[in-house]
Image 1 (cartoon, one colour):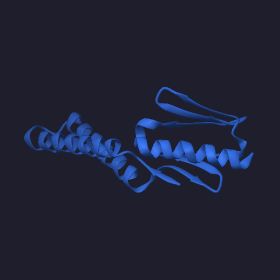
Image 2 (tube, helix red, strand yellow):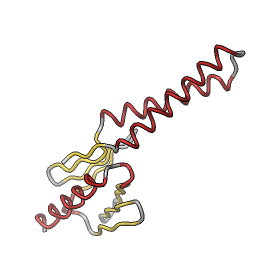
Image 3 (cartoon, helix red, strand yellow):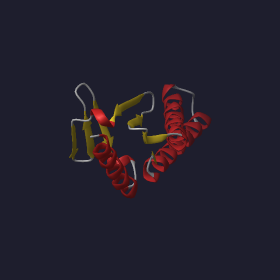
Image 4 (cartoon, helix red, strand yellow):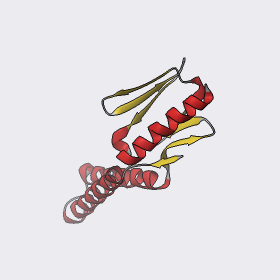
Length: 129
């Protein structure tokens, strides 16, 4: 099962990236080129890069009994059969093993995908026991 990032998360980064980049370009054209103008432009490109990452990658994958979360720069994974505790804390679904902790933020995925993901994890956990 593969779960993508939510549309709100993706497109808010796109809008912010375009906004910061446009403001940076306009300020570079209309004023002296200083540190602030470059900073706005770099900030815009960072947001656009984060948008591109969210468009191309899955946030959570459940494949062959392994749960993987793709971050922006790293990947964390846990085997379902090693899970000791599963709990919901606020906006997070926390999965714990003896030595690892994996946190799934439900604000980053749609509510339907979140419910299906939790059901899939619980089903695979029941099958592995």
